[in-house]
Length: 445
Ligand code: NAD
Image (cartoon, rainbow, N blue to C red; front, side):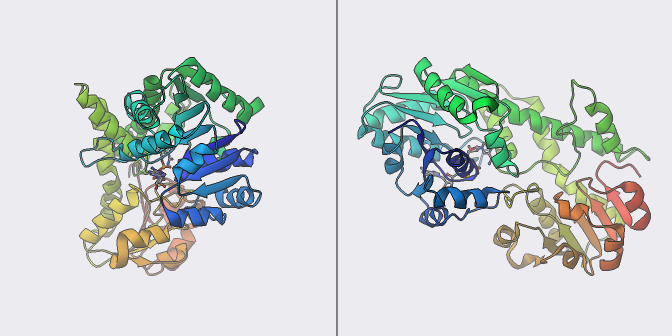
């Protein structure tokens, strides 16, 4: 067996995209999941979720024999020399991290290692609170394998930074690689895998201990979430000053190289499977350490109410929402994915329904997921213009490109009353301000 065979436990966004990335460069990859439907789909080359470019490449690597999916984690571990843990780490009720899938994967890997000869490296890719790799994953693997970490098997924590919507690109072109190593050999083996995989595109590599690597991931997401809540705070101030537009303010401060323009787009707040849960987990973890983070609590508070800004802006245009037909453009938590976990759209739609509106929704990729969430409480349109037809109000919730190409004339032509709220700042307020009744996050009127 060569070190070019890897296994990945978990076939969600991180696991499957990583698997396809390695397989696309000639590595033999075995992924494992307990979901037999997913196993069947992946082995047919069908992606269980939408991610740009993923299915085409998945089909190719499965057909060429570079990737297969199995139900039994043990089989994956025994046939490879490096195993990534990429299972989910959701929030518990109190916001703290739920590590049950990490514990279970560690146990399954340990059980398999008991039957395996030779050195094996385990790499934790899931986002886990500091100390998890060393104090939970390591002892569980040692207990179930009967082997010693740093002697019979190696252990690293290497956080994942891919963004849904550009996950494949990010996997193949990361900004940096963080290697949190239990011992030097573990780090050396993992670094040599990275050198072979990225070759001349190898990004900066930082080698450190596992707990520091775990903190890097949380600090990274907490900082980005802070930037979003910061610009949304500025947006809420701008809205109260006639003639001031947060997009110009963001451009103005973004050109300051100390600030940088990315993640400075005002909108309806962050959602998705990572930022909300990671900020919550960091807050809860800090509390356990005896530190109550005023800053992170504020970041979360700002974000919790920001989606409702869209409804308030719409109410300024239509007065009462009772009985009004409102079109929602965009449901996914961001463009390029069908993921609706913690999507802002859920809060917006629920609030509109609570206020008595009749809601019609459209998203290019998330309709199936939306049906699971909203059931028959909303109407589903199959195109953006169908969604707008006869509506008395519209809120743009996700900034898909196809919504950018809608013109003022489209809104006037299809809607019964063209009341438009741009929750993601995709329309030019000079044009829209004249053609339709228009409000936008961060636009002072
Ligand atoms: P996900 O929920 O999409 O997928 C997790 C998968 O793990 C599921 O398919 C689940 O069935 C599977 N699983 C759970 N326990 C298992 C076990 N014992 N054996 C095999 N499979 C098992 O999660 P995700 O979005 O891929 O995230 C995975 C981790 O990576 C999380 O810690 C997350 O915070 C982190 N992360 C996610 C992203 C992202 O954009 N989604 C980015 C960076 C980091």
